[in-house]
Length: 126
Image (cartoon, rainbow, N blue to C red; front, side, top):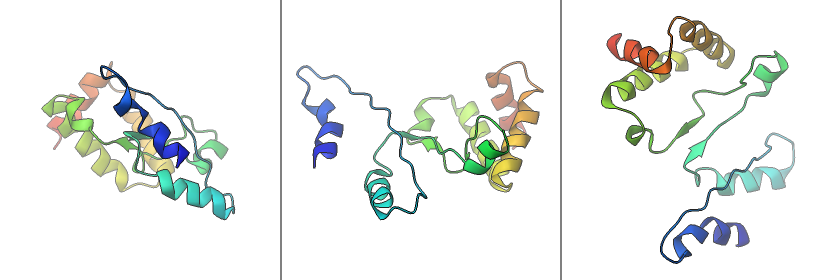
């Protein structure tokens, strides 16, 4: 009950406003309680960044599980062209293992001077 009230706090601020909460949740610990807490709050945030232990153990950083990570309103953050590029990138990377996806992304990123050109090239390759 208390966490839900805390997350709903922004709706009750006089004259509007927002509350930003950055939280972490450790899973796969073997603890039923950890899993229940995770299941309760999964999907309640606007953005989820999922880290991958196997990437971290292989010293591949950032150790991000790309297919499992994302934001709910990605479409309003980018232009149509960049959204097409992101969709293409996600489709391509989803066919790789987590490690293969990160390694491929690193290789692709080195070919472009900035993210905008990278996403435009991904959009054009559709």
